Length: 339
Image (cartoon, rainbow, N blue to C red; front, side, top):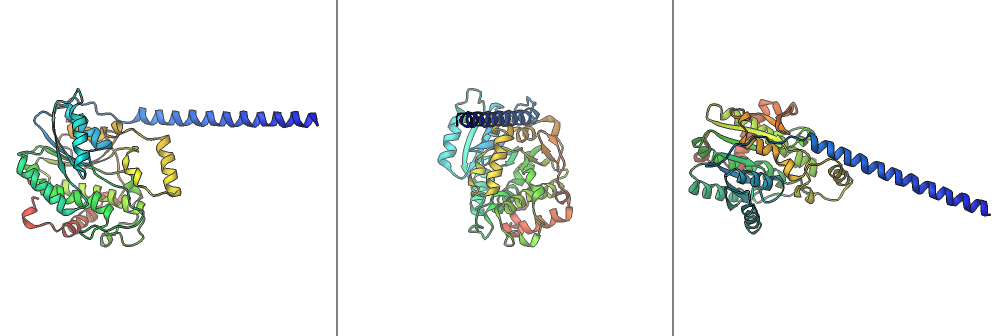
């Protein structure tokens, strides 16, 4: 009996040691992957001052939008924080302004890109108060909702927030951007666009086969198609339009994801290989300030360098078709057209 007990004890010790070794190995692998991902991430090296420049950033009270605003304020820009929650926006503005390195000015204005009336009100206020707009960063975004939701304008919520609202906002401000040239428009997209299902211009409300991932990836593909078409329309005007993938960034956008096996895997991925918000903001900052991209338009960037998109994102017919469908969806009026 004593021999069996001793054998069982040794077996338990061996199992404990084995699992500890596995755990340590996993921790080392995770930390190594995370270090490699952070080390190879692009970083904006430009020292350009933004003094005298006015920048609008949508969705800038958290995540990469907030860190983009922080950086541009340090470069002496006048930054307009466009946000849904004014109370939160004012709190963030105070935080950014109190940053010892902040040399610019921050303004807070309400904007809900999922609400077309809010977009029009925001644009009206900006055009009444800002003589120039030098950079527009369309950054606000949400992940698809667990259950399909429709806005008061009859648009699917994810598409409204991530595409249609920014489409309308950009068009409403386009005249001022042209007057302020050279100026830059930056659309925050995602590598996720490559996973978008078959693109159907007749189903931009995503009535067919709705699921959160389809809604999100389709909206991100729309960001790229919008960028391409707008770049063509702005050729020779002094307004450049580019899009970007910020990287895998652990921000509030993932907090709205419903519990599922896919969500579980996503959070594991975030824990292993993700950037913090500062690193995630680098490509947005690069496109806003770098001399390297002066005059470049219709391109897609990741880690502060040009990268390739899916073949679908390059299709001119889809870009033009999306533009025409978006004009109808947002009810763009003749006096709101500046292209």
